Length: 71
Image (cartoon, rainbow, N blue to C red; front, side):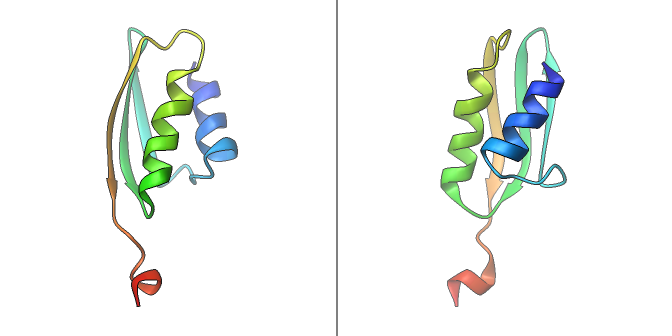
C-alpha cells in the first residue's frame, strides 16, 4: 500500500514526495504536508482512497498558494 501511495501522489497527482507525507494505520491513510493548489489537495485524497486496501483517508494537507502566482 505504501508503494502505491508513493506512486499515485508523485506520478498521478504530481506532488513531489517532500511536499506531502502520509502514514498508514490499519488501512487508514493520513495525508499531511503542503501544496500550492486546492485541486491537488482534493485530487490526492481521491486517488489515495482508490488504492486497494485503503479503508479511508484523513486529508490534513494545507493549501498555501505560491506568492509568485498571486502577484
